[in-house]
Length: 142
Image (tube, rainbow, N blue to C red; front, side, top):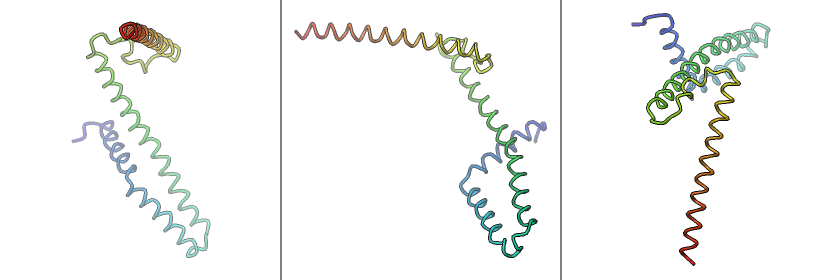
C-alpha cells in the first residue's frame, strides 16, 4: 500500500524511468513518429496534424523532466548514503568527506585540494621507498 504522495511518486518515477530506458520503448516511439508522418498526406499536412505531434512531444518532454529529475536525485542520494556508510566503516577514513556534497563550492574545493596534497605525499613516499628499494637491489646486483 502506498504510504504517501512522495512514495507514490518515487515508485511511479522509478517505473517510468525504467520503462523509458528500454529498447522496446524507443522502438514504440519511432513507430509512433513514423505512423504520424505517414498520416500526413491523409490529413493534408494540416496545422492540426502538426499540432498533434508538437503538443504530444511537448507534454511528454515536460513531464519527463520531473520524473527523470526525481529518479536521478533519489539515485544520487542513495549513492551518497552508501559512500557515507563506507567512510564510516573504513578505519582511518577521513570523516570530513561524509556528506561532502552538501559543502559550499569553496569548502569542497579546499577539501579536494587537501586530498590531492595527501595523494601527492603518498605518491612521493611510494617513489622514495621504490627508489630506495631499486637502489638497494642495484647495489646487491653489482
